[in-house]
Image (tube, rainbow, N blue to C red; front, side):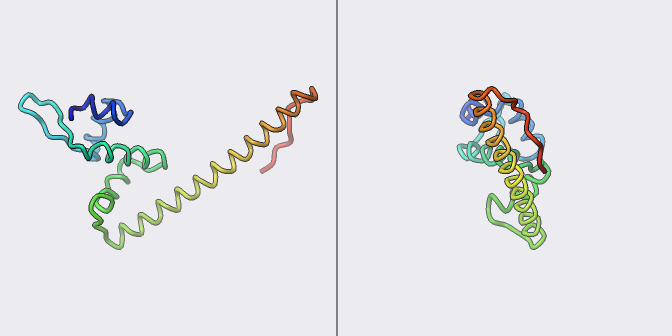
Length: 126
C-alpha cells in the first residue's frame, strides 16, 4: 500500500510516517519512481508505534525494543530494559488515575456548587 493509504488506515499523518522511517521504526519498499510501498503488516506496526509513543516511550527506545516485539529476540539487557519501561508505564498510569480522580472530585463539587450557588474553590491536597 502507498503512504497515503497507510496514513488513512492508521490515522497517522504522512509526515509522521516519513519520520518513522527516518527513525528506523518503519520501512518501505521503493518503486522505480521512488514511491513508498508498505506491506499490510505496516498497519499493525504503526499502531504499535503509536501505542508506545502514547505510553511515553521515545523513538530511540522503541527502535531498541522492536527486535523483541517483532520476532521475540531478546537479551538479558533488553529484558531488563523492557521491565524498566513497563515500570515507567505503570507510574504514568498511577499518575493519570490520580489526575482522573482529582477531576472527578472537581466535577462533583462544581456540579453541586451549580445547584447551591456556592464557590467552586476547593482546598488543594497533595
